[in-house]
Image 1 (cartoon, each protein chain N blue to C red):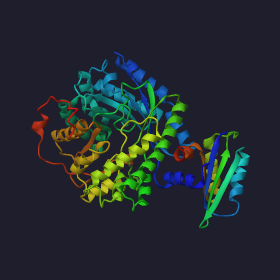
Image 2: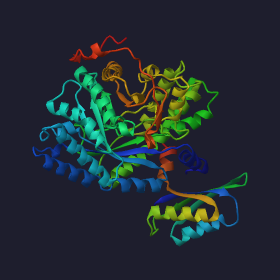
Image 3: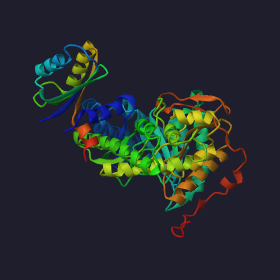
Image 4: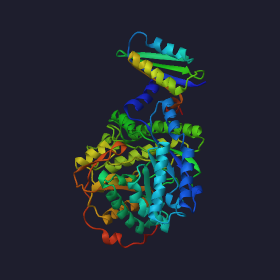
Length: 90
Length: 454
């Protein structure tokens, strides 16, 4: 398994999750967990996903999903889970 | 499982607080490139480094993308060239051609600096080492990416005052050779005492002879991150304050460790060390001086600055040590003037002087760094400043360094712009009393006693 964290931050609007999920489905990235919250109208979401079956290179996926974010006016990052694990877990 | 709060904390460090991995530095031993024929030596050097480093930049960028953390620089350090070129270089110009080869390699593999145009002369100079040192002004003037360093003293050997006197002249000459560009050559020249073999930071990086054939060293950074957490720590006493800094240093070093392991695995080159340094940049907020001011100083340079820096430096080390399996290099807080907005402001406000900076170097890495001084500063005065700094390192068993830039044609109060990560600096006044007779004595200052510590 190649655990990936996807974060979406931006002004809340209709269809953010739908857009992101469609992109992930099209690229064979399996969603394992979603948590989200809205603070002062700002949408804040984190997804844990498995990108091991994806055909595209990780860096290509990260670029493409960031572009999806730009289209709908939110910031989307796709990062490997290790960076968070190493920083927050001993 | 990782939660939203933790993910946001990490990403805010990157997006808002200038957190980055400052450099992945590939250390390459050139001892097997030694040859009695100069062109053969140059060919071997070129082939060995380009062979090992061809994927360095690509791998760095790949890791950066996957983890979402910027890796600002990819660099190379090599065996001190005085050792590599000793057998084939008969003149200073021969050494300069080796510098040109290194520059060509740096362009070829697209690294922004290559360090190791160096000589280690803490006790004495061989003819080749002296020749390399004398070739430095020309080498730095005719190359763009080559960095040079000279180790002139150590706790074990004492100080080589002949070399220090010579370096005073060499720093001046380097300034003159690059005077059309605000004497930028001097920004690529460091004079060390107790130089570490595995430092990944430029301009002082070289690949020591005790190192393996090739090694990956990583320098982390993050003054902006420490600054952010201290903004929320105004009410804390010193115990709590140090705890806060330690925790932050731990987190940023862990990312350095991850990047180092990944780079090592993907390049098939063993991991060497993590350098736990708080390295500022000219970006607003990415400043060590700002941290000192948040600890409680009106301006950096005010009484209390040395103590504040001591606790910062020590806490960074304590936090970082547990986060990495191997720590080395310079490891501490850097206090370069031109690369740190807060330092520049403190100098402009008259709060920070050369003498206070010297005191600060007693408790942190590395030394008098990126300090612009008037263009008419005498060679013997520069040598005297180097000697003072080397003495601090020698007696206190720590690395110290001097990177002074006598800016030809400029006077105290004028500004000098180096550009990019090197930043800009106001020209600082230097004590104008002479130390010529002291420097001209020649010989060595004996190694210090290792007992009776007072």
